[in-house]
Picture 1 (cartoon, one colour):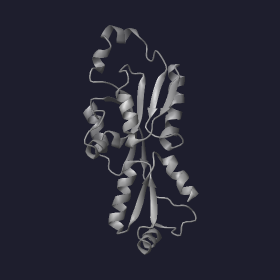
Picture 2 (tube, one colour):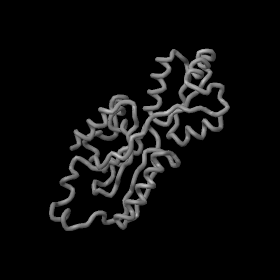
Picture 3 (cartoon, rainbow, N blue to C red):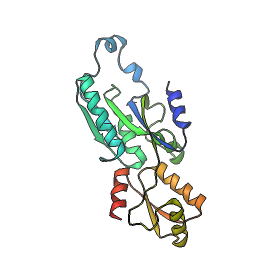
Length: 211
């Protein structure tokens, strides 16, 4: 089941996936005796939902909507815990090292399990063994937007402006997938732009509006 879920993430290129993962150690299945697992209802206490992005962005909004529905269904409080930074590594590590009792969930994105293991020599979690997949929540396409006062109003005009002003354009990204997409765009279009990394999409939008 785990391999199939991870493979499904790897097979979709060019889109962002938000995934709900259950924090679990390698001994998760042995953490609760079978008799206890059947005897106890779930959940037995408030749920901690770790979101690997800052408040105000699409992942956070989704988590709060999901948390409200889960709280209504389970009769337990769902606490949203925003832990942005490190290309989701901070949130993923926290979830991976939590008690494997099913009461800590991680809402993350596809590259937490795929790209990060290729980009970093070591990770404080195992993309396969540290988590048990629960559900694929959304698919989000990448988009390119500019401040309304920016001279370019189309992709063609952006390329022309960038070529006329090499190295003078900054572009913000809230995740490593956006940054890689930006580098690919620069390579294909033959332009020079400087990436400014942020901890999430909400921060990128705010910076773009300020100009």
